[in-house]
Structure formats: C-alpha cells, structure tokens
Length: 271
Image (cartoon, rainbow, N blue to C red; front, side, top):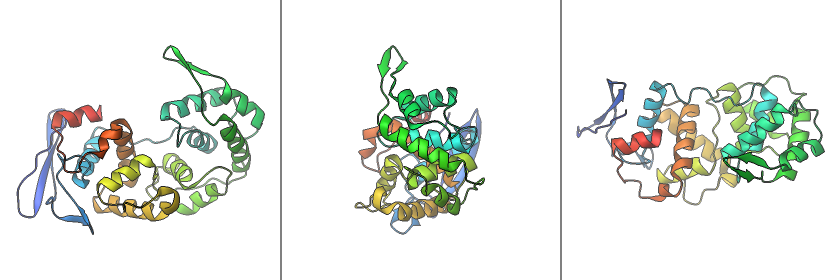
C-alpha cells in the first residue's frame, strides 16, 4: 500500500511511501517551486504533477517494478516486438503477434515478407473472440527488410549513436528505435515519446501545447530527459511508469492537473 502526505513547510514538502508496513519519508521541494522553468513541482497527491510522478516512480522502484524492460531474447527479437507494436496497435495485440512469429521461428532475419504477412493476417483467438492484427501488409514488409539488415549490425549499446544505426532500418522511426534501445540495453539516454508520454508532458507544462512528437521528437526527448534528471528518477523507469499509467487512465487524463487523487485511488492505479 502507498500513502503520501504533503507538509506545508516553507521550502520542502514530505511524502511517505508505505511498503508492506515499512514507511520511508522522502522530501522534495515545495509545490510552487519549479522543477524546470515553467514547470512547478505540485503536490504528490495531485494527479500528473511532477511530484506525483516522482512519488509513483520511487514507490514502484521500491516494489521492484519496471526494472526489466526487455521483451525479446536478443536484439532481433527486440526490434521485432517494438516494430510490431506502436501507433494504432494495442500493446497486448503487438505481443500476441510477436509471440506467434517468434514461436514459428520467423524472427531470425531470414523469413520472407510473404511468410510474415501470412502469419500476421491469420486471426488471433483469445478471450472467446477472434481479432485481427492491423497493418499486416505494412509490418510484414518492414519486418522482413529490417531484420535482414539488422543481422549485419554489430552488437549495439545504449547510447544515441546506437539508436542512429536503428533509424537506418526500414520502417523504424525515432520512437521505435528508442524503444528498442531502452528495452534491450536498459538505457537512460533515450526516451519513448509516444502519445501517452506526450499527454503527460502537456499536463505538466513540460511540453508546449503546439508540440508534436512526429515533428519535434528529439526536442521533446531532451526536455523529458532533463525532467527525469531534475526529479532524480531514472529516465527508463519514469518513461515506463508514465506510459503504463497514462495508457490505462486514458481520456480521464485530460482532467485539470491540480485534481487530487486519494491514496486508495493511487493504489488502484498502480494495481
């Protein structure tokens, strides 16, 4: 169970994290203090403030969550699972598609576009219903070409130059390349600026209202990485925590950024 309480001290506020009956106090700057220019800390019990994300990240780290981002057993599989997910494809469907291709031995960089398309086009059964994977033709084309080229890459690392190597692969843009690097190398040097993270940044006034990840990806990434550093949370952890919260909360995230959330509600969001 997690609880947070704010103190009305002049310069600092306190929050308490309750992990299995063991309380730990953390102090952060006052709610009106700025984390970065134009971005106030806010209070940890108010949804989507920097203090809220600091609290949630610290609590999750202590619960040993969001510490392992890898989805694939090797780099080719990581590229595959990230390429199969993304815009317009629910995370669960992307994983189902990845598991089918992996289990059929089609992710070693030798599978043809036709074989991949056939596998992706076949309906997925689950929860008593049949579902289709969107963009099967497009993803099969990108996947066959990207994996074939990726076989020639030397083992990469977790820095931005390694991401640049992935950006040269067909169908892989900044978000997908960052996703691969973050996951496979547990990297804090990149960020996955998707619709969920962008929404959170807008609510904090971290990103400009007119900003667009499709056009301003690297500037938004720099702002997010600076923000993570400013609140002393690993970028990879903060990215994952925000993504998970925002995708589950969905449209309710458009509520005013000062809206308060009870400790019970915070627990329900975590679970």
